[in-house]
Length: 170
Image 1 (cartoon, helix red, strand yellow):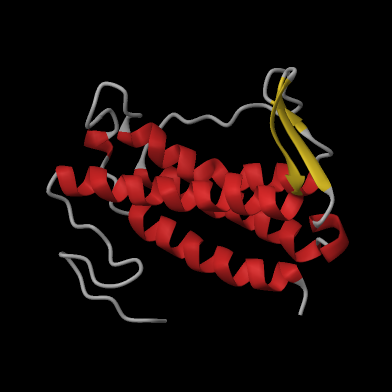
Image 2: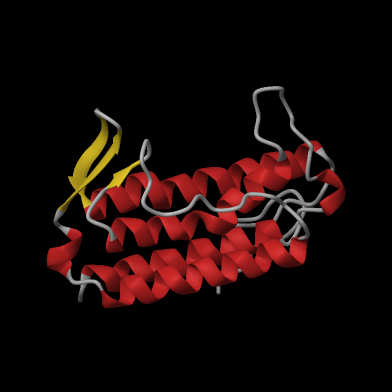
């Protein structure tokens, strides 16, 4: 079994979780922040929706320098739940296609990730994918669950039952 096949199984599961969470983000709370240092809910939702594009960059680009990006920054303006979900679907489809095509050898190549002269990471594409994209997506999806709870909105059952809904394995 190729590494990408295992990653795709995890990716599909987490994208479904992210989608179920984004489906609960109301437009009227797009500017809600639980703390002054927190990201607004709508911006965080769009960050989750566009994050698979970062996965594409890890697979498709030779490196990334945040001080001099080669690709444009994603628009993180939350306009509507429908647009947020469409953005997730589009970015997830792009990433899924890139991951389906990648070889094990390519995943094991180093991928320099920098901010100018400062090295953020210089690990394999696989490790960078897991740590800086995949775990990052899981983290922010869970963060949105906290935002939902703080606004008395139902939190989806993602890995087991939540206080609001039962969970059943697919």
